[in-house]
Length: 263
Image (tube, rainbow, N blue to C red; front, side, top):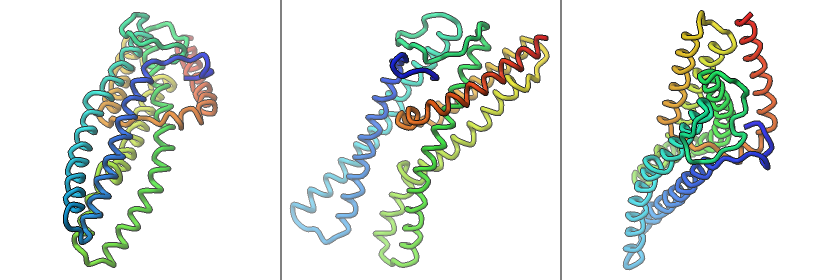
């Protein structure tokens, strides 16, 4: 993650971009569904009313289909391929057909330690990106929440209140923010786990170190699989240089702790 984008190659990212594209289409379709629902609150008649209702039904079904297609196929495929490249890099084998170059950069030789450090680095960057995503979406979510409370206090139109409630509590708004918050909090726990193993070095043997690292790696992979949140490439490239410097300092602490434990 810590190199020039001209040198770095990551074919797995193309799978994530495809998943992101499907997710974007789903959000657009969701917006169309909401607009149609709002229009149906007015006094429409005739053919126009029929068109709007049909569009609302089709867009709702399409949205559900696209969301599940994203989760069960596109995002799953991307995550599966990323795990294969992670294992390939750590063990020095060809477990994946996707070509990556300079995505993983730590010079560790021992396979399990290399796997653990790679996962630690990935979790480090993931937390940074999620924090930025949470900040931007949180502001929007706060604004929507204020509007919703104002509506509840001022409106007596039950149809409007039901529509806004369905919109707010959909996966695209409030639940999405809650999931981001959950992801961020659990990433903190995972990072503390890696920190305790690799930097605080509270282990008595190589066998224990390997077991703890594998457990931490699985915790991180299970967390990603459960949350199924696509990271923002725009945020990553914007802050990559800054965060790479932070990671380099953190990795130096890992090496210092390793040298200390060996002495």
